[in-house]
Image 1 (cartoon, helix red, strand yellow):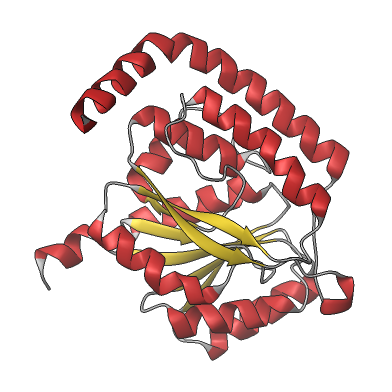
Image 2 (tube, rainbow, N blue to C red; image 1 turned 180 degrees about the vertical axis):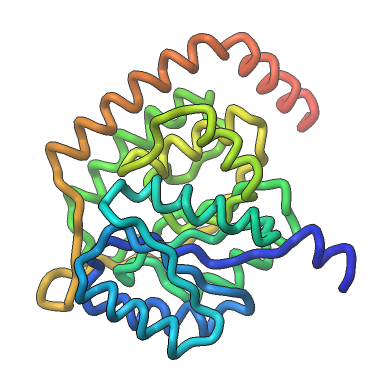
Length: 260
């Protein structure tokens, strides 16, 4: 084993909650594309889903299923996976959704970049097709604006897209400092807080597809509930931004001078 192998030990982390029939395709494609373990964190799914996940773990050697007895939220599921990953000696976690929106074909490229830049947060930046719901495509621009402001335009390409490669230790550090980031607010808050921490941000254009019910698509997004959660999250982050503003300005000034 080389020094590089010790510095970069990735796994795929797939949080899920009653993901529908696309979970099998998602996991099989991830296993096919990833030369590393694939872990599913079941966030309190129903008994039928648990049985299907157990069947996947029995069928596929590199698949492991972790679980919550009750639904706690996406961020909580990721946190459970991160604790287990660190204990097992993994350094990086590629997170992807269980519903097939995130293309498994992107996994090798994202991991290759993370291997070259192990200190960085690797962010998928969604490229939408013509069938993407306009409300979802346009609505995310609001969250992206606030995330840009809260980091002084540090370079978060898309604050809501969950296909990312995280260094495990920095992400655990920021999650353990707050009781938030446990539900739908996980993706944008993780990006902002890691930018505050000083991680380099690398954006990678990635195709994304939304599946409707006719294509076995399952969405747990609830417009009013989750947008209220995002509003509260950005209010908290804005307060943190104001506290950090002098340091962020100093960092941005040094970055600009270094680039000239």
